[in-house]
Length: 157
Image 1 (cartoon, rainbow, N blue to C red):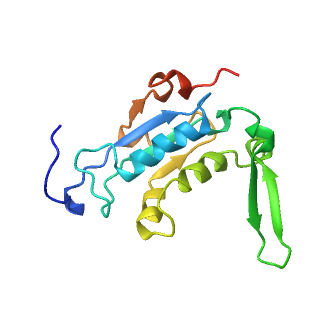
Image 2: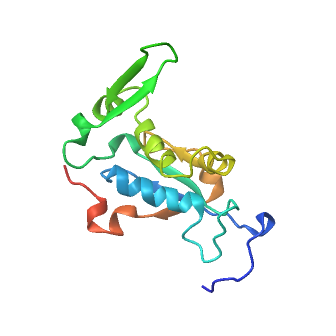
């Protein structure tokens, strides 16, 4: 692959579809890999102000792993909008709850540029499924074995 000198135009972008199996993967490492793919930083013709990233499908998001004691000690905060309305929940409760894919979604969202229309557009190209099934077979996604890229990417427990 050769680096181009000219800036990439939005019409010249060719987006690929990739599938990542998150079962047993470490959340932070997986989120940084996904964020890099969404932004397009893996491409030699990366342009910061153009959406040149891939469409990413994540399956088995409910089976991700945390290292250390993050499952019980990591706290997610939200605010209701009323005075004194700060609510908190642990990562373990979110993973055991109704929408376990939100753990990975928030991790990726926080690795993209903040308060940006480009980051919001890039987040729409991320599809996270808690189970093993996804509905994007028509796009012929390429399967990426994330856990085989590095031994630290997977957690056995």
